[in-house]
View (tube, rainbow, N blue to C red):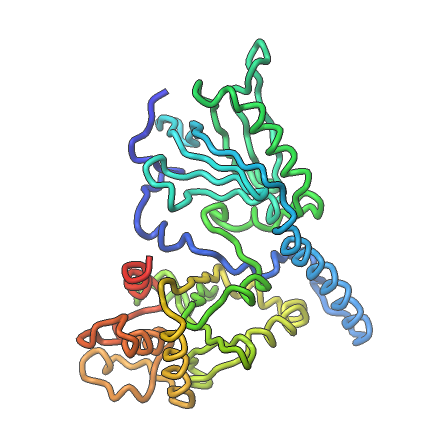
Length: 373
């Protein structure tokens, strides 16, 4: 079988947009629609009791995943496999693959830094099958299929990997059996388009990892948001920044059309989100939430950035076409303009650039990727 030189995934070229989107995705508690009642009972006691049970169940799953991070087997595997293309006329491509921490990941053979697919067994239940050689000396091929969808990930074992093929199969089986996805029958990820293209991260992990300057970027559902993204040619429609210091909760910093420039506690959101999601199904409002950490920044710079951000609190929200044609006094901001302004104060963006020209999606991501990755 020939190797496809472009290493395409499902007919999509390995382009910059794919790399930009391949950041950690804030998994909104991995919620399934059938975990919630379609109609809220009239009795307040029933609502509260149901919410408590749902909260306990979902919180337990999240805690299990977080706690098991330190308890996972240390055995890791890496090697090359040929991925069977889902398209009839395309040849199979060779990928560099890794298996560790209950996660099967495959990469472009020429770029092992940016994953093309992450099959995390903790976040999704998988059905695993394989085919042995006629003499049963090695494994010829295997398939990982997310339970709940038709998508299949089929890999052919090349001759150079045959000696390890049985070890791969054994460890995949072990990881799947140990996984939270299998034990809790989690199939919600299969409902999302190309969910395997994105690494997931739990909200509790963000509490531990996030630093001042890190970003959350939102892709919101809705006709108005779709129109906004079409007009701005952006993949996302809202952006907020994390602020963190030792003496207060992890905060989110944003400019919203309702309140202007504000900060609010990320911890408070976590505390009340189960009830909020249960009652209003707010998790359905977002197609995707990206978490993008700000890298290669000193602690002193983060402290300075925090001070710059606090100085903007209380200013208004403004999204006007006049911003693009005349110099602004920077007293009012829309969401990504505010973040770009803070980055400009830090020297990350040249003084000659207009902060209003940076949008929540592609343009700010391009700058961000160029500066810090």
